[in-house]
Image (cartoon, rainbow, N blue to C red; front, side):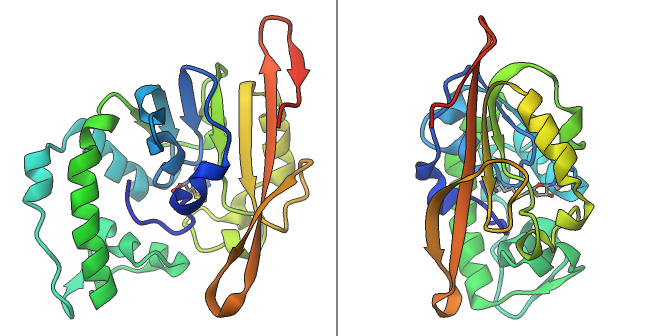
Length: 229
Ligand SMILES: C[S@@+](CC[C@H](N)C(=O)[O-])C[C@H]1O[C@@H](n2cnc3c(N)ncnc32)[C@H](O)[C@@H]1O
């Protein structure tokens, strides 16, 4: 929905489509999976531990109208903003710790694009739920679980609740207990589940980063576990 460090928008087509009526994103961020194609029509439940991020969702879901969004002022290059929704548009992992940001031409342009995206997509999210809490508080229900935690190691640092604060052994046990299907996103340092290669991304200065995936579906009626991916 919004610019966000680590968002999955550019690669979301590579993940399996949801097979259940409910999608849960226990590490919501900007929730690219739930917004992709028709996924938004499902019962979408987001969990996000960072209160500032959860508050943005709360505003979009429970308060904002298209009129409110169109009234959001444009940003002028050089001005300073302390609005968190502006700050995360810098899409850098350091942004989570900035109190203010100086508007660059790129940020002003990103904000202009985002306002259009907000207005065009607002109707899709009005039935969604956002819960400001730890992933482990999510209900134990049958769903498509799109699990995109801060990646283990360096690339998951930066977030207010970063990879340093996650116990990945506990996370892997929790993942394996989910009912329905789980899609777990990770990077090259991930070793806590049997991940498989998904794709390689070319970053700045040609640096390659590897995306890996863990997919598992549990047939709830027979409790039979199928490895479909
Ligand atoms: C990689 S980002 C998710 C990106 C998202 N899939 C997207 O497309 O924008 C991970 C998110 O998990 C949140 N987070 C970190 N620790 C958490 C926890 N223990 N419980 C819930 N959310 C957490 C971070 O604040 C961050 O927003």
